[in-house]
Length: 143
Image (cartoon, rainbow, N blue to C red; front, side, top):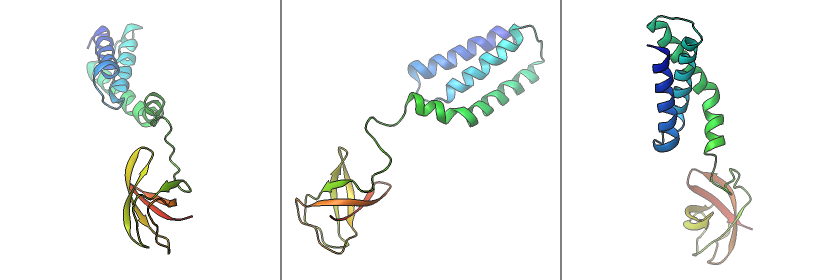
């Protein structure tokens, strides 16, 4: 492939990711790999097409493995105010739930399934402490 075709493909892939397609930043790295492959031809290093494709593939794979997660988190990140650590936070129980019982609680603007892992029952309006989070399920107990 001619060097300028690599550059055009690379720019199109990067623009597609940034402007329209939500491909979780994969197209950005494919675009960068294509641009770097085209740059090799631009500086005058003539390579056979098979070698160009091998360089493109290697650059894309290496950059995705080592840099994609960091760039994704930098660009998209976690929702504002979201913290991974939920243990020790408080929630208000909206309905009575016995020991070992299950209910729904409001936490961070969402309804969560909560299991009372404590020995004491909780009544509506009580505050409970989150002892563990597992997926979309919270384990709670009385304060």
